[in-house]
Length: 124
Image 1: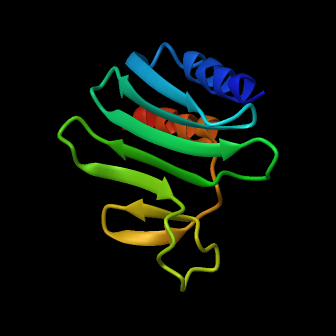
Image 2: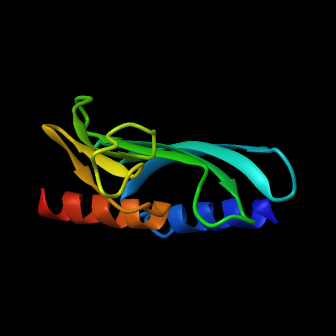
Image 3: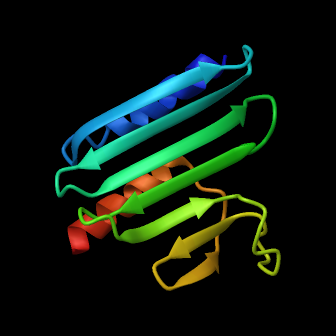
């Protein structure tokens, strides 16, 4: 069951193969419904998305997540995560780091992140 969730994430990555130079993922199953995925996607412009999710498919949302996107010079472009800080935000614990500020955000899906990167690369 959790394997199907992780396979779907890899399918989402492959939808953007025209933008991707290389990617790798590593998966650990804790049970048939809960697991961990960590991965890295290197895009054709040398920017990089590092991501991780802890997911229990019997629960709504993710236990933990982080999606960190940097340019080819290791400068932060954005990071989404649900680390329990920034309690003043209405979307706590969900938030987005930008180079110069922290903003409210929803809990994104990997596909949302890759679409955001595709738009960023298109407008770069």
